[in-house]
Each structure stands twice: as structure tokens, then as C-alpha cells.
Image 1 (cartoon, rainbow, N blue to C red):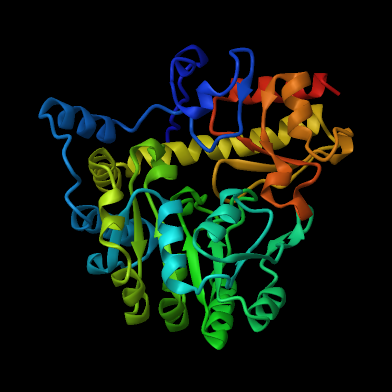
Image 2: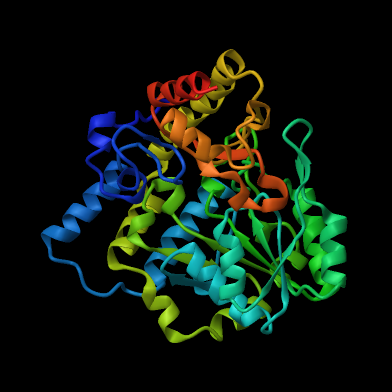
Length: 383
């Protein structure tokens, strides 16, 4: 499959998004989960057409995006989604918070599996819960897994929900069906809810396909709610559109109890872009996956050649690399050192969980090979 080529750096620096706005021009910005690839043509075409017809009113509700996603999910993900069991909202974080507000009582424990996407900690408290950390088992060298015994114990101690990141950000791990099945059984035994953030699902590499949580068992369907979007796979985060998906009467009751306004937080452009992505974006996404496959392997080679003390496990999904930079002696937050001394911006490791993030950083490799190579060279020269 031909790869999608990243835009040139001079063009990227004309973007006004957070990734390209937050740092001076001499910094290579690699912390924000945003890709450097040009927008998929079907999405660009749909948005241009909307502007041409002044189609800038309120979004049309959940049904159009739900039907488009159901087709995409069936064709690419092996997931049968009932469009009637989908509620749209503005983004995945909003969806997680609204599910939490219905699934737990104020103060209830909510499990997060560090290292984890940093906003998860804030989303738990925003949704009324208390963070319960159950770190991932394993690690960079031996591979990752859920600490199922630890999760079971946390539920037994009173936690009422868990935020599952499937695939996992920042480590790029894709849980298999057996692990998800076991997790669902634990949740069922304790009457708990698994809220599955599956926004990176379409970015799993073909050799390690992603398994949607709601597909693995009756227990998963009964005790799970999925929240997903086109935003990560198709680089449309700024357009504000996501989906809350259920597959049981229990899940339906959670969606039905949400405030009316939850659905109307989706933007019109987000709806239009997502429908185009789900219906016509497959070939573009295949090209992106080819580029990401090449870059994740290139990163391994660059580190071996220039920074052999840095530990990195090639991720099976996402475009994010979790790097152990401890051997460089750059302190608990090596991203701060990298920014000051190498002019490379990375994601600050401790923010992903203080217990496991010290000495680590997250790097976004959804860029050109040239930018990735320059970043590693800069880091090597800063030792």
C-alpha cells in the first residue's frame, strides 16, 4: 500500500493548531497526538462543499454519524454496531466524563492503568470519581499486559469503574480478546463498568488487529461502554465529534440518562468530516498505516544507532512511542531537558503516572522520516 507522505516542515509551521503554536520555530514539536499528514481528500472535499453551501448550522444529531460508523466498524473492525445504540458528543474526553457521571456515585473509585493518557486522571475527578491506579504489568523489555489480579483487587476494595485504553496510549499495546474477556468477567463479578476509550483502534497495525471491547463476550456487552471517534485515525481532533456506543440494556440506560445537551456538543463540521472519513477514508488510512509502520521501525533503528541506552518497544498501534530515557541521566522529566538542550518537545513522562513515568517521555512519530531523524540526532547531540 502506498504511504501517505507528511507535509513539508515549512507548510506545517503555518498551521495554527496546538502542536505548531505552542513552541518557538526552532523546536521540533513531537508531544501532541496530532499527525503531520495532509487531510484525507474525501474529508477535505466534504468540508469545502459544506463551506460552499454555508452549511454551518447545528449538527444533525447522532444518526448520520452512527450509521457511517456502523459501516466502517463492520468493514474494518469486525464490530457490529447498532446505530440506535450510539450517542454523539463533542470528543472522547467528554464522552468518558458523561459515562462516568451515570456509572458511578460521587467519590467512587475509578481504575486507571498507568502509564496512561494524562487527561484520564482529570476526567475521573471531573466525572465525580477518585483515581485508583493499577499500573500496567510487564514493561518495555518483556511486553505489557493488564494487571488483572490488581484490577480484581481494586474492584473488590470498592472501585466501581475502569477506564480502559484500547489500544493503549502511550505504550501502543493492543490487548487481545482473551485479556479483554478476562477483564469483562472481572467487571461482571463486581457489577462494575468498563469505559473503553477506543479512539486509537483504527490505528492498530494489521499484524496485531485491535479487538473492540464490546465484541468479546456477553459480559463485555453488559458491563462495557465504548467511546470512540474518527479524530485520531483521520487527524480531525479540532472538529469535535465522538461516539458513545453501547450494546446492552444496561448500557442503553446509561446513555438515556445523559443530559440532552451531550448529543448537541458535536459540531456540524465534525459530523460532516466523520461521515466522510468513515465512508470514504479507508484507502487514505491504509496509506497512513504504511507510513506509521515504516516510522515505528525507523525509530528503533535510529535509537539503536544514536541513543543505544534508550529503551523502546515498537508499538503495535497508534503513532506514539514510549521511551525510557533513564540511562541518559536527564532526571525524572527528561522531556524538560530535551526541550532546553535539544530543542525537541516530547510528552512529559511523569504526567502519564508519577509511579511509572519518571525518566520516560512520549514521542509522536506521525511525521516525516526526515523530522524523526533530525529529532533523534538532536537528542543524541544533547547528551
